[in-house]
Length: 514
Image (cartoon, rainbow, N blue to C red; front, top):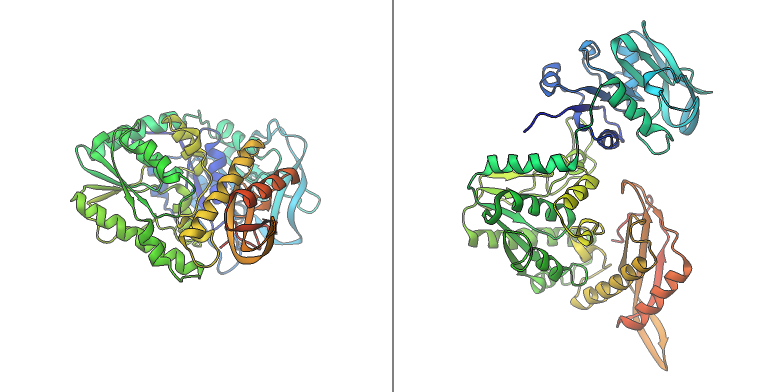
């Protein structure tokens, strides 16, 4: 791969490790997250322009604390310590870290020294996000204080000669009002980056890399129709053309008309040079799900059957050299970096089909965040309705139908969801809502339609505002829009006589209704 400037993010178990890397990449500078256990030799091989130390749950002076090699700070590479990273810098270089007399959580006003390169162009008094119980009580020799709050006398410090900078607060979160500027100052002014990380350059370099690696090899891709697998498929198509075969398993749990839309884009009449196989396995999945009501069991059945169908089709094709997966960077990070906690296991990370005959795996999007994947999709010319498609769970409507999944319930959910999405689009809200969809409750109730008594299902509308999908709040949809959705769904969707709107945030609820 062509050499590119990069910033290394060393993870000490902080919950915002991904966010730090994303903020750096928003400056058009490449960033990678690695565990704090990286050796100095490994760091030198990566040749980073700068290093950022993340927050973490430990106390630097505790027996169970996690430390990096103190020699990291004398490598001649600029370092920015954030929260735990700032305390670790102070502690390892001879400063003092203690339990703070007053813990700080949430938005806090901080006074900063604007003559500091880190705070150039920042307001003298700025709102930041704090989250700490320990604090730096004394800075190491050679450091000076560059920021303070009412409860935290050392909210920022620096040793300019050594290229070391630290903030007790989190510049990477949106609650830190001028946080993006602080990150930009570190990346450009302190580290001297030029900003050559763009999706256009990524696409060009990745296509060259794939061609070099694959040559005339045969490539197989499991295509779900989601953003990640679709972008991966088109990227591979641009690189290897007809050497790529995409298998699309329609399990009958997609959104309305979605199977046909995927075929229209990737099938024989579509614009891309690849081999496309559609497997209509709807009835097979419905039979497997008959009588099953527990959400996790439904997930496992759908996942296992998907692999079974995919393997059957792969065997018909014969031996392939490479298997393509749409793994993206959050999948990798959340599945665990070194000693970091596993947030959740992802099927794309290590969960390969056992019996597909392939030699190697290709994950062309492995180092990209979701927003970057969408930008790649735009670079590749994918239509907006695919690039900006709403997030959709792997088990599809199987987890948006509470209770047993039947063909009738799938039809009801698809029709109701299509109406909801159409009305949100008409209201001009489609791109401002994090995620929205219609789900089907397992509740049936009495209703009156015309002169007749009904006993039908209740549809639940769900819409949330979220940036990272780790937390979410209910979207404030105008009552008139909701009323229109209700009228249309009850009048147009057979089997529904009641529509409800889910106000639950995450936590305590999940975004999906399962």
